[in-house]
Length: 278
Image 1 (cartoon, one colour):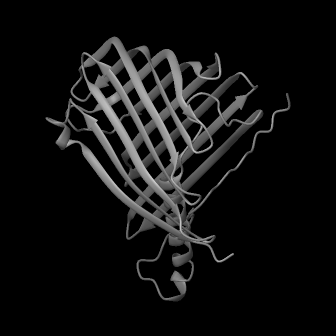
Image 2 (image 1 turned 135 degrees about the vertical axis):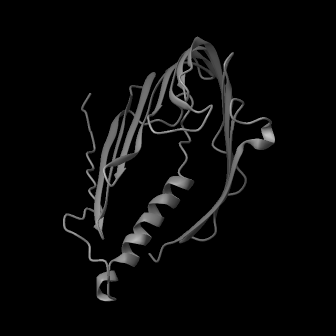
């Protein structure tokens, strides 16, 4: 099998020289373009949705991958800041087995003081057992060395296995669920450590309402004696015209270690629209 690894190295916003404290109109000629590029990327990430996240339906044979790198350095009136971001994606599918790997690292400092030091990573393996059933194994890693909020994790590692079932799998509707046992190793702000059995359950829904409108809803729950975390992403996607697309989303994040009730969870409402001239 030929490996077709797409390498995309993106180095944006690098400022090697000192930035003047006072700017003119001419200094800002590229600022609007840079802002629009960043906004496009944010909206693309916001409306992006992996419709083949469960099982291997819809997957193409072969490999895929990308690497992204971003570094910025700024100096202004004696204040300095440096920010580094690295992202990696890699996966393959051979018709029965599929694997997806994602990793990202973000580092930042202001005036020599570290402001961000975070790593996120995950590996998901899927194997088709039949047209409806599949098996999976997953590992998710979150390390945040700079968080200081009580109850939050400086490290949270979950590894689990299980089985999944495709309740619906047509061109118009895809709904899959998966569940299984796992193990959680975590460290919490304040020094507490967690090493215990855990379990995860997830639901993945895609439904086409018309030729131009579809909804998605993704739910993930990880449970252990120490804490239960839940995330849910509901989105309505509309292709208004051939050139105009709209996505409205509502995301919920809940952690019973930091939220007294479900209503205390983090809720984010988002609307993004993109118009293409050609």
